[in-house]
Image (cartoon, rainbow, N blue to C red):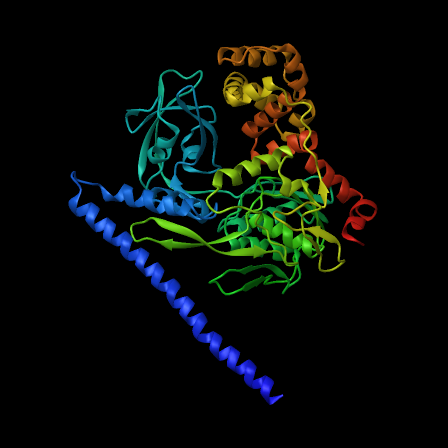
Length: 530
């Protein structure tokens, strides 16, 4: 026994120098490459035949190095960082409008309730033609934020062309902080069922979410719509999962080569104890996958839709001193059952990675379809089988129904005809619509487009280069009318009414979720192994 102990001790002590030497060799190589890069920079800046602007070269070099890594390690320049900060902080300083560019004009789609623009009298469908005396007809979309945003309390002069109004209307608008809402819609589907649509995770998400939930007035069941939610910040995702899970339940864990493993747990007991259905699709990513995966692994709710994107890499943001930053992947996310959220990728093959995502949407991505090759895990309460291998696979998969989508409809949408049509329609009919439909309920039950209006759409599409195709138009007509009517509801009322109108008519995920909640003991409980 003593001999065995001596041999083991000898082997361990003899391996330690080898491991230390390997680490030192790796560090020496890294330092040598850093010296090489530094030497090149100094010689280029000092000796090149012409004066060199080194800033764009350095930025290109950083981007180039990251191109050889995973798909989510990125460099953000100063402007990109400023925009990202606004998204995560949940507000910016501006005039408070939702806008679009149509026919070279800035069109006011909606005004923020009680925001600066609404306060002075700007209206949906107004065309902004002047900003501080400058003619902005033909301005690029990328220039609009710099024109309309500015320090809180600063004043911007806006010139507006309004249908029926003589000449240009002039407004002096004092900029203020404008919230970037992350909860797009919340309403009661029925007496017992509520619906909340969350579009991303930012600093204010849980405040908005709690207000939305309280506004539902005590529902017993909830549809949490995370479809096309691209993610965002981790903390609000953990808090949202904790809204449904018991205190102390693991929400997500991380592991990486140089990052210590961590587990993130629900900080408070589940506030909502009713039945839950979570909606996800191919564009649900990152934080939304964390929430959906946690609720699925704890058998807390039914997940409905399509396999999510599969973005489960943890980035650490490192400021570079001039307002720019780099986000470097340092770890991977795991769901509570141990599933890796990140779908497979190859370093340096970003195009292949995103083409695979397109394949997931069309049903040709092997990660999403080959269930035999994917690892199987068990949920933590009822020990149901759930799939790993990338993304969150729903408990109820809804295959896409493309029977109403024609090539003609795709071309109409791609050419921006919807936006132009709605602008023209609201210009001509807003006053009569407001009288005819004083509330959403009356609109929901009675609104319909006339044949003449739909012919206007066809004529408008022709002028934009989409030739009429009567057969394909008839195939897609009902879907197009529903989508356009939902846009009218949004313009008349609010974004919530867009979802209230379209969900029960065209959203298969929503309709299946409602059926599950209305028939929970017979249809949903068995899916949870109960």
